[in-house]
Image 1 (cartoon, rainbow, N blue to C red):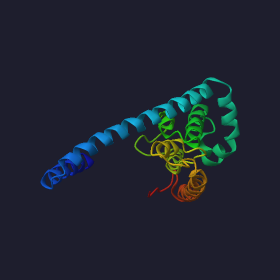
Image 2: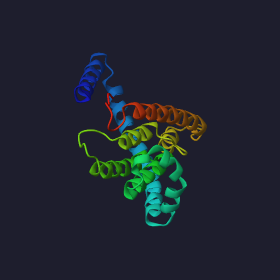
Image 3: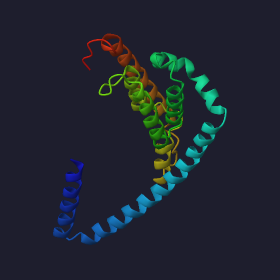
Image 4: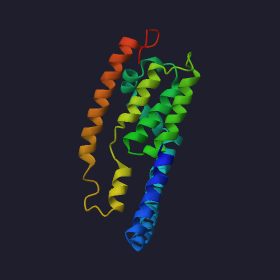
Length: 199
């Protein structure tokens, strides 16, 4: 759908600019937008390189085991059926740590790995397991301690207090995660694996 809408928007904008004598402003707008996109990309690149490097160090050291152990009580509550799958536990833990640190792009490949690992043990390949559903919910809620991507965008746009959104982000993501987890736990209890699932 978007593949159709974007070309239509572009064509209509160009025709309107020419018809109203604003072709020069359109041309300037295009170059300004390209410049802003490059500036934003460079800002993101620096931020992502820094945090991806930190996450790689975490993966290669004993710090990973300490982080996994720290969030183990939450993992047992969220994923009670993954007790014997150490690899899935570790991959999900890494994904959660990346999300908490605000590294959405770094968390994506870790999330794909975790889903692939869980799918290997899934007896019904065309149906999500309870653990997979909970994992999707956790990623959607995206608990964040440091929303680095949003801060980087605000910095690139000249915000005087780019980190001023941290507390509201904490409140919003914690509330979303709590509501989502409770709703998912209720749905799993009622229509979980081995039951007449209707969701």
